[in-house]
Image (cartoon, rainbow, N blue to C red; front, top):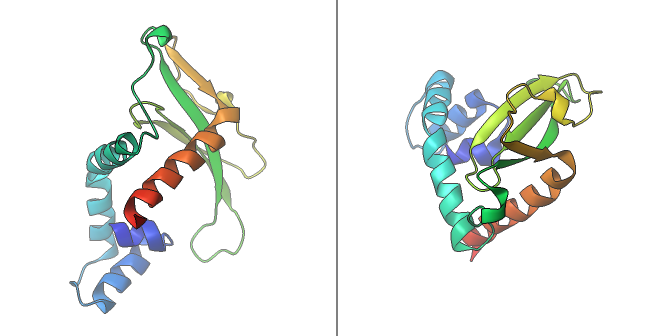
Length: 147
């Protein structure tokens, strides 16, 4: 699973790396299934790392129970392509790190809250803070593993 996160190109590429490393023989479907089933554990792991490094805290009382979702997007190539073929928009909970929604669009679509369908009355979001917050969180995550 961590090989896929670092190699990040494909499930078949990850399966090949696992095999070449002599760990085991695994299919790309099995890599995908394991990755998919580990989502809650990865969320828990990231939350613990972020909280231990004081990169994320408890939601402040003044939010009154509202959920905060920074939104951002990344351009993604289809396997084998050398350019961005689609844009993947995502909204992740600021204080619980839970995935609210992912929405694929064309590459010309900007990062805006209107790309998401599941925001409700008690949800707050902002495209402007998404990138800044996630860069800080990723920095804390990698610092925890390299210290």
